[in-house]
Structure formats: structure tokens, C-alpha cells
Image (cartoon, rainbow, N blue to C red; front, side, top):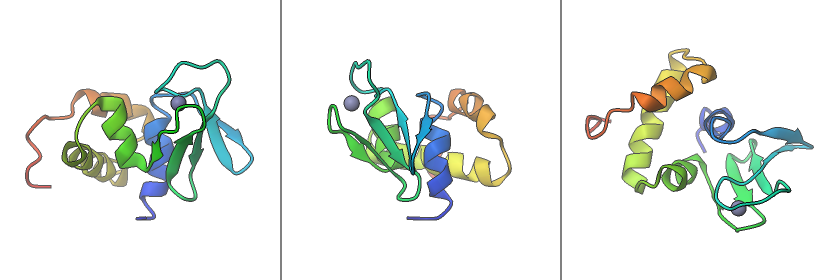
Length: 110
Ligand SMILES: [Zn+2]
């Protein structure tokens, strides 16, 4: 995986759920099923997430697909757009703003 995507997975997922560091991984309440005990894990090193409760998992692209209910290509476009923004020094805290301004269907050149 692209090394720039590793910290990105935490930044992106961290905007949807509240991540807590647990050993080498990060844990949170799963956004894909209802639970009271966190079983949603993010492995920054591998750039992967996995839920032990509902067994969803994958990389940051998969996460965007699932949480936004969009297809792979659209998720990829959005991720590319976010990555560029992050590289340009846009802070994680501005991600919500970025999300709101995600153009739909305007990123055909990525
Ligand atoms: Zn789950």
C-alpha cells in the first residue's frame, strides 16, 4: 500500500468514528452495526480495518465505499481527491469540510 495512505486511513476513519489506541491498533464502536463494546479495529501499519462483530473489513477505499454507500470507482476518486488535499497540507480537522465540498462527477480527470 502507498505509504501516504497509511496515516490517511486513521484520518479518514477517525472522522466517522471515535478511535482509541489499543496496543498496536486503534479500536472504535463499529459504524456498520450496532454495538456497545468496540470491536472495530484499524491497523495503521497495514492500512486495514476490520470488525470482529459484523466481519466487514478492508482498506480505506473499502471503508469509504461502505460508509458513503458508493461504488469502488467513486470511492477511489474521492480518496485521490482527499489524498491530494492532505499532501497539500490540509489538516485532518478540515476533512469534514472537504467531505461537504466533494464534487460529484467532477473528478473525471483523476
Ligand atoms: Zn461491525
